[in-house]
Length: 127
Image 1 (spheres, helix red, strand yellow):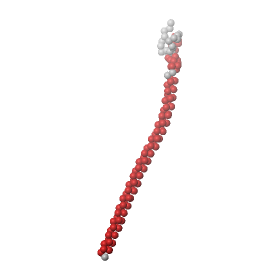
Image 2 (cartoon, helix red, strand yellow):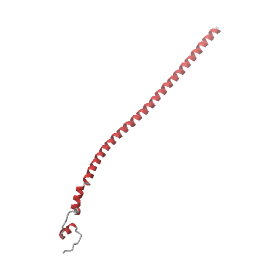
Image 3 (tube, rainbow, N blue to C red):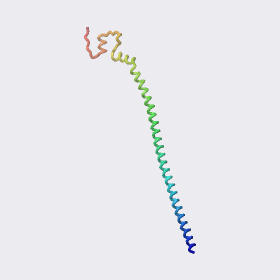
């Protein structure tokens, strides 16, 4: 009877150890699953952050390209304006009309009335 009792106790203790081992293994498996889920969540958050930054930079790039296009058009307009304003024909017309200048080979006969009109603040002696 002692032998039967001993066998019975060994069976139950082995079964208890086996159940405890299974519980411990289940806990370890559950912790590994939770660690994988947490790692996946962190990586997903990181990925979404990177995508958000990328979209923001793409939007900024589009704005900068539009600004560049506008500035290039303005620059072209200003270059044309500069060419028009600095043309020698225009400068010569202004010099003749507003400043009363003539080219060196031209002869200009100026009367006292014309001189007074050209240079209004001067007094000319009449001959």
